[in-house]
Image (cartoon, rainbow over all chains, first blue to last red; front, top):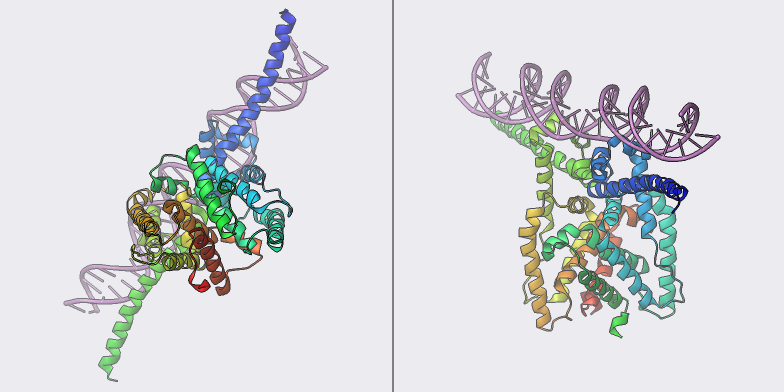
Length: 222
Length: 222
DNA sequence: CAATAATCTGACCAACTGGTCAGACTATAT
DNA sequence: ATATAGTCTGACCAGTTGGTCAGATTATTG
């Protein structure tokens, strides 16, 4: 290897590392903020606590995010983006398999990543001051579409007549509960954390219960 | 009416009023604290905000409650007491009617008094620092007993075999959700608040769904 | 190498936090 | 009427809050 190549490699490495450091700090701050905001809500979280959690000086947090509100907004947006991935569905799909997939993934997400779930819950409990518009526009549209699809399934006789609006609420409630109330549930179950077996078991339980209410059967019971 | 009687009446009235004022202030503070703690959590709530909400000087709050922690503990205890009233049940009871009654009352409580539900949720999301012992002792005992009763129902063939532990979680989740996520739900339903018809409708929906999962039928479908 | 731009942070600020307390006010008892 | 006990609150305190900024440090460029 020539000297020039080593130099170039070091140069590239430096640039790479520099970029990585920024990226890493940004990510560290977001992660730390998620933890603190999820645990204490927007008002209860302090920039100092976030800085300590991230292992950075407080002023450095303000270099990346001008204000607490902007950091909170960034964390919330990130959470929302990560959340609304699945459940893309049309009226031609099979209700049982769609609902099954959605519920299983929601339960898994709640168990494996309870923090975003708790963050969202905190925001809603506080009256959704930051998500007010998001709920009334984007989420509402998403929600209405899903309700329409479910109702078309009912019209097609693919499932029993069930209130689609509250069916969705029930899916959200019974899956997110495992994230939001993780502390309570683990204490009552006398467990330290959810393991893979728990996640599958819970996912199947919730799926079976809700599908039964719709007159449907999950794939593993066929 | 004799003069003496008037005097006595005034005396009694004064005492009554004095007692009433104390009682009223205490209640006002508790109500105000419930609102603020439920909305912002323990750390996020400020004594000043509670004082303003109660319409009293801040120092007066500290006359009734020595510290923020003690006020929080009092509000939490009050909420817990008010919550665990119903669901006293034995293995000789009828599953369908017991579950139906419990679910309906939980949904009604969540819709009519969402604040205690939100307060409890905030505490759990924050990691249950104040309720840790309560959950591991009192709530745990309550929970285990209910699990045993449900399992005995299953052994007696009174209902389909269903995981009793997660059945209880599901009941809690799908009822409390209407209190904790009130803001989101009302926005999506485009409603200002739950009315009596909503409460009955939601209660019946949740009851039907969960009973169906247990192979049971609610009373209104017989 | 120098110059320029990006990144970092200790020290600071006004506003707010939970909490205290002396003294004012009010009610009851004698 | 006076004394006693209970109730109330403005003013204050030390510590924390979100946020700023000058200047140090580091990286990039020409």
